[in-house]
Image (cartoon, rainbow, N blue to C red; front, side, top):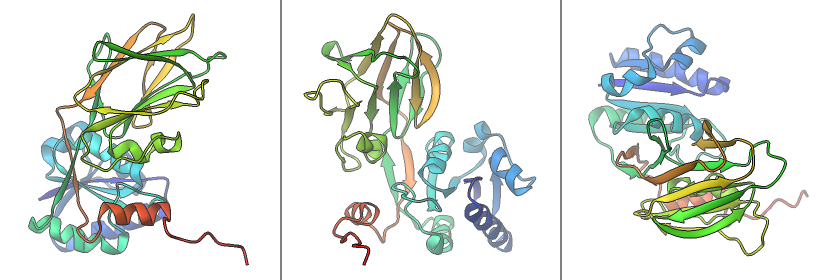
Length: 282
């Protein structure tokens, strides 16, 4: 088995863990490569272009937070992705550094299970469709006035939202930006998306959960300006006034290696501190 390894290069703890992992893999004659950015930060010559990793590697390892795992999953196609949490919150990175070697042993032996997650596919009037695991976000950008975001579900007009932006999130992405903007937490594998407005001008505007067989079409009603379209937090395009973006369920799925010692309810309790008393400062 050959592993592709992505590292959060801004965290020294992640870089140190990567060096330890390399020594561990060499002892067991397990082949590996890094993505170019990680290899450069580590001074390692074993790397390949991101676009070749899915073709040449059997599984992906992410050392960092959810952002690093999202980057790895973008190139993994259908290959298994294991997330080692070296970040802060980490909803998607299910394994701790202490669990890493046991988890990789199971991966190498084929003794592991998978969480299959849906993705979004965003299409524009020109260019190739793009995918994201968490969300597609359209923001007002530097516009001095709040634009109107016109939204259709298939061919039915839903509403025109005056807001700082619109988030379309998968169930996986419901605990990311959408939750911060007031959207609901949705259990993974639920066959739904959530549309969450960012700071809407009207108090009656609320997030809405829709079936994932719907196509969400969005255009921006504004006299001028360009509006950033972000996929998993990365700006991929600037939308012009009147230009439409179409978002639907992608045919490509992401396969995350599951931590069988945990379940989703435990992850919510641990990450969101549910059931924990807040410190009094005494």
